[in-house]
Image 1 (cartoon, one colour):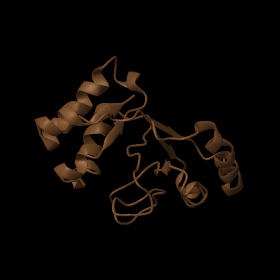
Image 2: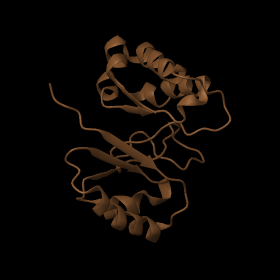
Image 3: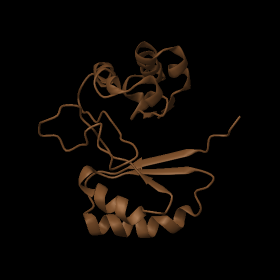
Length: 161
C-alpha cells in the first residue's frame, strides 16, 4: 500500500498585491526545502492567482484557488469549476449562515457537478471545525459525501480541519 504524504494547505486573505505575493514565495520556497516527503498547497486570493502560479512554477509548491461558484454569470470573484488555471480549489467561503445548510448546498452545487471518479481526488478542508460542534462537522460532511457519492467514496475522502 502506498503511503500518502502529509498535505499542508494554507490560504490568505487579500492583503498582498502582486509584488508582495512574489516576495512571499521567494522567502517561503527555501523554508520548505525539498517537498518530496510532503505536499504543500497555497491558496491565494483570486486576484493573486496569476502571480502565485508564475512565481512557483517548477518549485513543487502547488497553487489552488480559494473559491469557485457554479453559476455561469454574476458578480463572483471566483473560478468556474471548468477553469483549468489551477490544480484545485477551496469551495464554500461563507459567513454568518447556518453551516449545515451551506455544506448541503455546496454538495448540491459545486460537488454535485463531480463524477464519483472526480470526487475520489477531492480533499475537503472545513474551517473552522468547531463551527457546528465537536466532531459534528466531520460527520455531517461525511454523510453528505455518502448521500451524493456512496459509502466507499465517503469512507475514503480526506477531510481536513
